[in-house]
Length: 374
Image 1 (cartoon, rainbow, N blue to C red):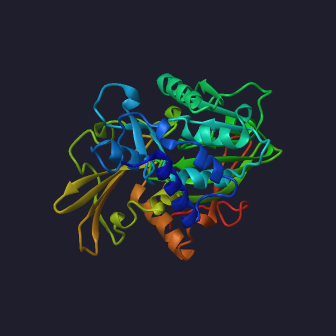
Image 2: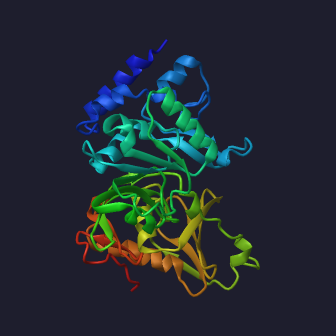
Image 3: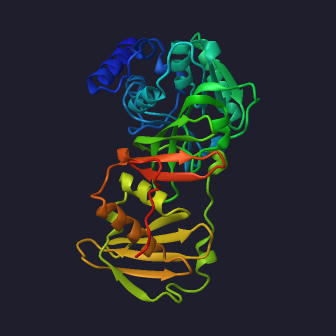
């Protein structure tokens, strides 16, 4: 049977060999048993099995789902709480760049493991973690105490303001946001660091490392791709397709064609970039004739488009309707990226101004990355 201590040491060794364990964190990853924070039943990339498999998965480099559908029922439709894979946990803690004596606010307690690592490294009194789900918060508080750790665990909405006297050196979120809440910037001291997953409705996300300025702004680069559950306040419920197309498809949309196959960027960080460059846009896919039909919708419920992706084809049928030509906007953003020699994610960044404007930039924070239709 797999021994917990042996499994934990193997996990730390794997992180060190991969170069993902940041300096100063080895003792905490060894000292905080990850398996104590996991429920008896969880969902990973491998289902079922005995206690030995449970322990191996507890220390494997895989994300683990610990709650579905906000804990309501057993439909297992939408994962709503989880334990991130150890490499992502370590990488984000590296981005946070803490030092002994610093204070940290965490948004999204989840299992409590990340808060436990922070408390082990910085001390209980320097760590506050916030969880919107009361049941999840209560369990995390209990497990942390069982592990000998007592950071402050709050049951609250992490997007809300905190008392003005509470200012932190660092803020880390373990849920993704479409927009960085202004409250997070105000909760940090000037020079403080915010590490948060940022996502788009169009697809996937990336970790942003933002430095808070004295003027109430925050700015910094994206460090790596990511996929996190959304901050509950920023979840998006899509309208019915009938709200866009009350009659039969294709309605008034003429037939067009494109040489750009949407399947070429699905599942890559490029969907995140396109979502940044073409905001207020989401898509759905449905199987069609050996390929896929992409349905694009704007959040204003004014425009839609479809693109038929057929395997092996060189040209793909497009239909567009409404004041926004959604596929044209995607095409313009893609051409913008290609014209700049396909820059990687690490060259992009985000600035959030004091008045809540979000600006995406390439290489230079002073110059907005903006794709214009041609």
